[in-house]
Length: 338
Image 1 (spheres, rainbow, N blue to C red):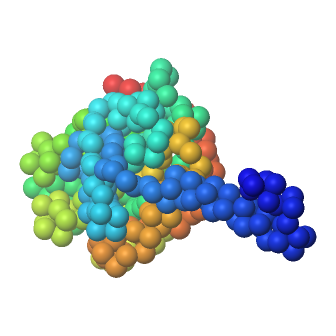
Image 2: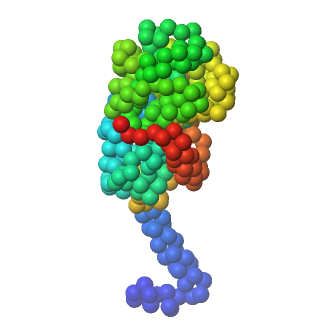
Image 3: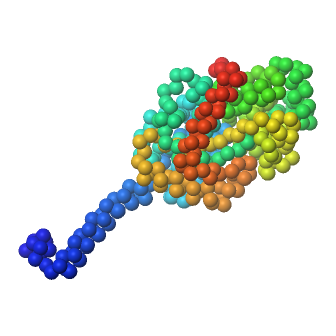
């Protein structure tokens, strides 16, 4: 007798038990398939596109994150540095990557500025990506080469700049980067003039600052921290309304009469649009776990940064808000691609 006939001929209690067992089996099978899809990530190395050359501020957070990822999952997070055009070359490549959870993108404030600076981008940061997590937020810092700029503090430097308009220059990670717009905002609020020199990433700009080939930078504290501590560059001011715990002797913008100079360098994690929702959730869970490890907390604190605590939905809202905020700054400053 086949199973269906057996159920038909069985007593009511037995039929109920058999049906329950069958339903449970189907449920376990379906649940197992879902668990394999979501919980199986990562089953192989994961590629992380970092849209700037090695040695910049993004790397200062991406590489420790990759090391911790390997410890936690047993899989490699491969750092794929693709610099150029203020981070838009790497973003373009990431937007076209396969949406399977094994291609991630570590962008940041540069990528919410880009839509206002680059009129012909072949991707849309709000439509072609899924925002996953805010990884780090760190204030911008005004840093100078101490051999070129012999001043005690930011007030002396401002006086020097105003007495010598156009004499000094600043390096950036590229036209349209946060370093560039931070400089333009500084010029607007101080009435000073400094020549902008764009590079193909913060790393090369920072190396030229250390070498004395440029005078100053508006850099993320994360990439400058080691060089400030080593005396290779001098920090004159951090943006915002409070001093940074990692550098308590460096005054903040509000203290020196620039209460509206609030610029932070933040880094986030995206995945290409179309990545399955369950895989997204698995990635977000893993990133949150990494952010709570002592290693990451220590490294982030040493860089003057905080690990993002926003939900995935709130990070998405933040991205949209930042796109519109920086569009206003670009318009007010008249910043253009050189």
